[in-house]
Image 1 (tube, one colour):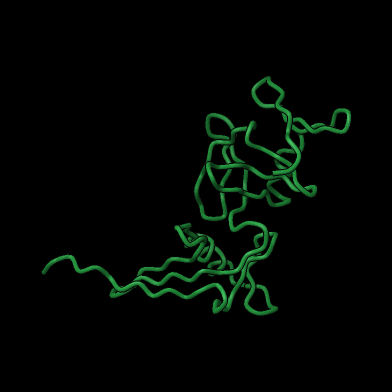
Image 2 (cartoon, helix red, strand yellow):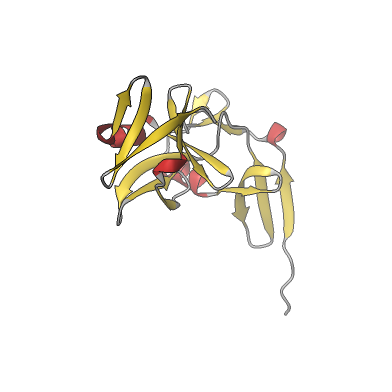
Length: 155
């Protein structure tokens, strides 16, 4: 039997029954998701394609893509760990080596440019870097491996 392409079912943003807020919290209507395993599963399914961010789920006979509304960004830094230097762990589970030159502040929140994507730090993840950050003359900088890097303002 040959490899038959699976049917793709697309649910547009306007029809999604869930959303992601500006802090990386999933909602169904006005209620936050409570089940940790479901929350982690939703985060792990986030993908980006030519139409934007969606939750992609493969079933036996079809692929389902649900484009969901989100505030600010769909990607978040949930943790900062050390693996031969600082590494950020995204809400999707992906690990990215932290490049301090790609950090920027916007509206008192820390962000990271990852290629063409923008990733927002959660408060917990930002606190993990707090000891390495300093405000000097109204500007912020971060220290990594004995060097100081200015953190730009805005996008």
